[in-house]
Image (cartoon, rainbow, N blue to C red; front, side):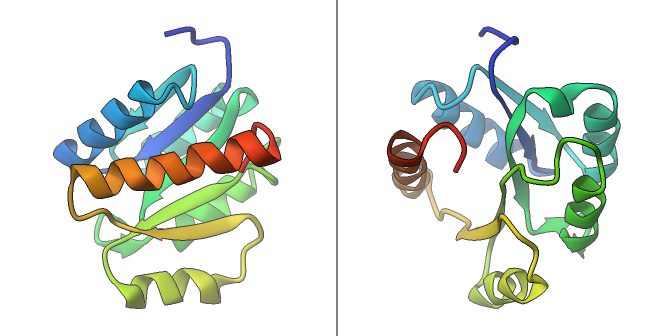
Length: 138
């Protein structure tokens, strides 16, 4: 993969979920680089260290280390160059999705955590269509 193009940062603590998401993103060539980290602290270190310049999308699990991801989103938004980068939060329950909506943070959306590979494919295809219609950033 070419690391000089747009990047997706995937923040996912579950190895199987992260591997599945990486495979689908690569299959559909949604980004030149998919960088995966297990927690928000590691993501913030990478973003502070220069990954923010090429990051065009952040995908994260709603629960990071057992806590809602809102604190991580707020900290990411405080980093230079990441104020407008879209963040998509993957939620396991409708209640979690409602919580994300209540955060009221601009350019943050939620999706249902796919129950299986084909649901994940369907979600990625919708994301790809959005990029094709609206440009490189969802």
